Length: 197
Image 1: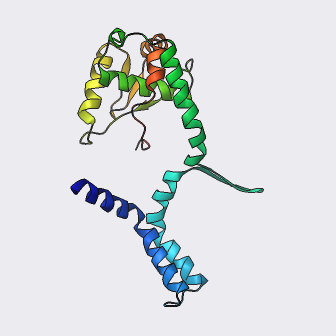
Image 2: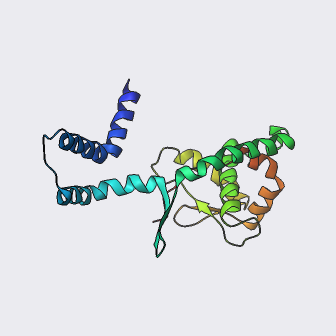
Image 3: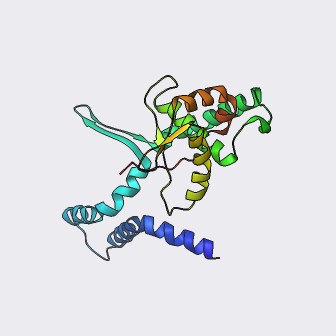
């Protein structure tokens, strides 16, 4: 019951501006209150700090130009997710070596599969640019992340910078290419990121 309550509370924390705006719109439609265009504009401006983080979770890009505006949403990629997952499953099934042949723990494999996936997607296999990520101290999952990164760093497969972000080294990239079938089959284990601050 406590988990259900926590889910409802977290949902309300994210959606409260929309709930209030919905209630005000309902009261306006029922003629209980009168809101003119200026009032609507002021309401939207006052709720902007709360609404923008919610909107940016769903809109990836937004461009305004002489031809109008265009937006790319997270939902635009939903059609790509299923084929990508099926592709990973097909790759994993086609060259599926026994699980014992991967020389590192499941935690390290998750770190490598995430680094490999986004490296290929954003910079390519041959690029000298590297994609990196980290889990902040104090966040749930930090110790699991560190237990995956530390053995890889000691073998020179990943590099951890002063902010705690880890990146593939050249040796790490070569390792991922050698173990492509397993890592492509796994896909990224870590998927929710915030920009480096």
